[in-house]
Length: 161
Picture 1 (cartoon, rainbow, N blue to C red):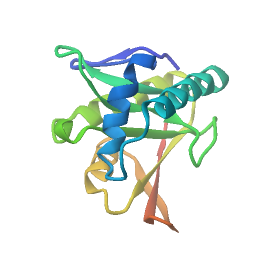
Picture 2 (picture 1 turned 45 degrees about the horizontal axis):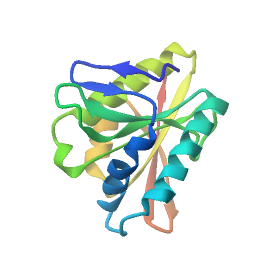
Picture 3 (picture 1 turned 90 degrees about the horizontal axis):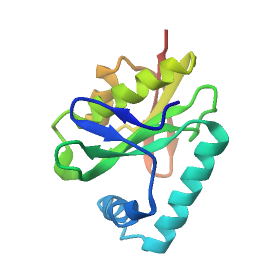
Picture 4 (picture 1 turned 45 degrees about the vertical axis):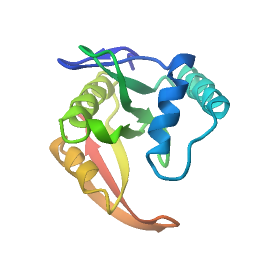
């Protein structure tokens, strides 16, 4: 999978240590406190190591014109496998509702097709209607649901050409 993706409005690229503060602020929007920057630097190193091992990546998203970090999008093993990874994304609340998640996830989807993969997964909290809409636009279909500690999780899948 290429680790540099561009769309009309966005650039997705590998993580850098300088992303740690922005990544902390994004995670803090989940409402569970702000993680320590040192912890996030370790997480970034782990993401880069996983990318080197698996050939798939979770990538920071920047708006091309503004150059600001607005979230991340990419492929992860998550609850799936390297052969059939999960697509994952999370954006700052101020970036919601502008089509950025759909645009970034579409670029990642195209990159996944280019690797020859046959299927992608996504898991989303049943309460997360905006993320479910993004996946619907990308032609993901509901596969099943499961109950986890945080509530119901919807499993979706998308066959690739």
